[in-house]
Length: 147
Image 1 (cartoon, helix red, strand yellow):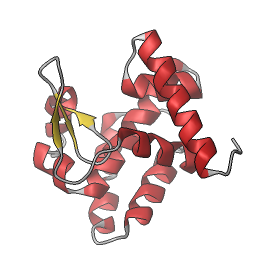
Image 2: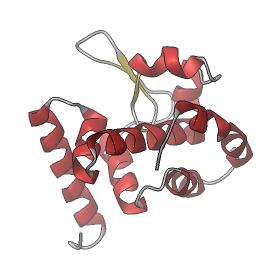
Image 3: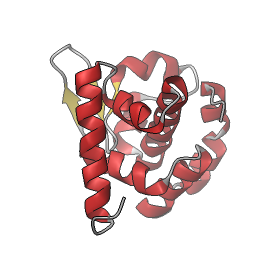
């Protein structure tokens, strides 16, 4: 799937329409829109461990926002399409759709599902592989040990 940021923003109507939807509807809708395996996307969001309103500082001076911990390095690009820091912090559906877009982007860039999952967290190989393994374990635990 070729994903451009314009595609993310074309989804704004879908994101807006999903406001008021349940958390699981937003999660499933984002996974479907970006052709992500739902169990993997759930595990990534779970591993990120964020929540509405969270603005978590990083050692490098950037911040991670909301449930899926979207990094502030993406704010300039996202702002061109009407996505704000406040939305990333307080609108679960926007946060999840941006997360799904970023995950799909990294998977496409890596050419490999699990390398892309790891790169969602960091492109540093040791950090990427460690993160991907944590997501695998989280997913296996949610599926009763099945991958």
